[in-house]
Length: 221
Image 1 (cartoon, one colour):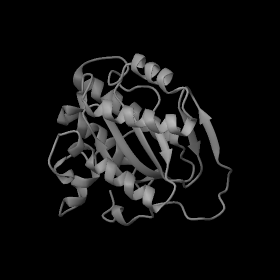
Image 2: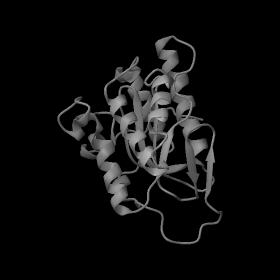
Image 3: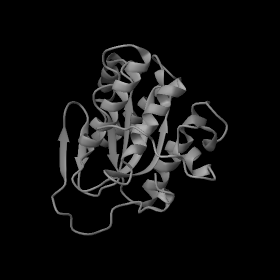
C-alpha cells in the first residue's frame, strides 16, 4: 500500500466520463456504476443478519418514500450489525488479517482504497475503481478470496458472505468526510475500542503507524 493513500483524490473530478452511468440490481439492492466514481461498500457474514429481519423491515417501511425508507433501512442494518449477531468469525485475528490483506492487495492497481474497517461480522470500505474495474468485479475478488482462505483456516465449507453487498456513491467532499469518519469510528461506536486508531484492522490504525506496513504476500485473483 502506498504511503500517501490519505492524500488521494477524494471524489471524481467533474469531467465527462467515457461511458454513461448505470443503475443495476442483482436482487433487492440497487447499485450505481460509473468509471472513476468513488463508492462506499459494506459486505457482511452469511449469518450476521437473518433474511426474516430484512423482510420485516421492508414491510414496515414500504409506505415511506423510497429515499426515506432507504435511509432508515440502512440505519437499522448498521445498528443491527454493530450488535454483533451471528458467528462473528472476523473476531479471529487470523481471519481479520486475511480480509484486510484482500482489501490492500490490489490497492493502487484495480482501485484506490481510501478507508476501511474489518468488524467482527461485516466490512466497510471506501474506494475509487480504476478503469476497467466495476463494483461487482472488485467485490467478487475481495469476497471470493477471503471466503476461500477463511474457510480453509476454519476447516469449514459453504457460503461465508451474504451474497449482495450494500454500496453508495460519494456525492461530494462532505459526504466523503462523513463516510471516512463513520468507517473509522465504527469500532468505537460498537464498543470494541476507545479510539479509532486502536482497531488494528482499519485505515485509522494504518494511518496512525509511523511506518508503512509490509505488502501482503498473497491476495485475491
